Image (tube, rainbow, N blue to C red; front, side, top):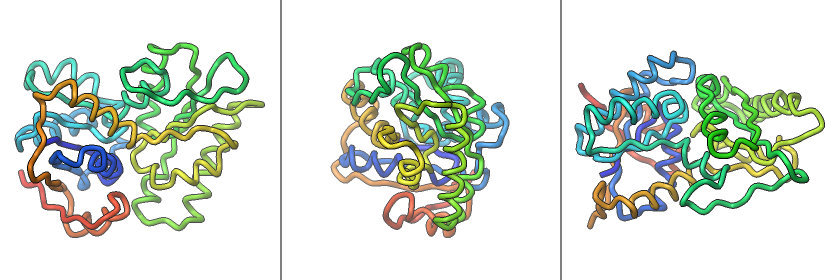
Length: 281
């Protein structure tokens, strides 16, 4: 069984892609809805919450956990993998949603990725739209710069979007917010435009078409859930010892919040109704 963790609902867009890509695997999703959102928390607080969530999923039988939250992955994953995991669970693995996107942008990967369109050669520019904490972590510029220093990364924090999406904001209110964030980023690119845009929050795939409309024509808007699903499938083919196929694959859902409320609001993210159970202890 593969664990999938997010601070709330957004990771369900990743799980949705994982279920399509790996229909013969079982998944256990844990959403920390009671303490969401993470995007405006301190880095240390996010690390502690992420570590506790991963520990919970390990305790429930998962040998591999996907941190399907950009804020948690950007803020905590490297430290968790390099310090906490070798000491506490050396035989288990934790992956995140950031690396597959970075690999797709830079082309430095075993996973095939479509090349970015260019503005006429030279430097490539990638726009990253994310939560405030993901932007503050600087994870995308740092990780992309390690692999492809010629790629320019321009980040834009979108602090209102998660709340608008989860609250069921109107099309007009969400569209206006997206257009405002895109306009703010474009003001820092006078006379230019990005080659690609990363929607660096797992809530944003639900409104990807609004980013496509607001950005200049021809900008590649990368699908993070699909990239993560392809990456995990390839990773499992290389590490079959971490998980095996199930005769009767299942998906289970846990929440630290109100199970009934979370179940009702999850349909838009997963594309079907599911029943969450409370995560005790």
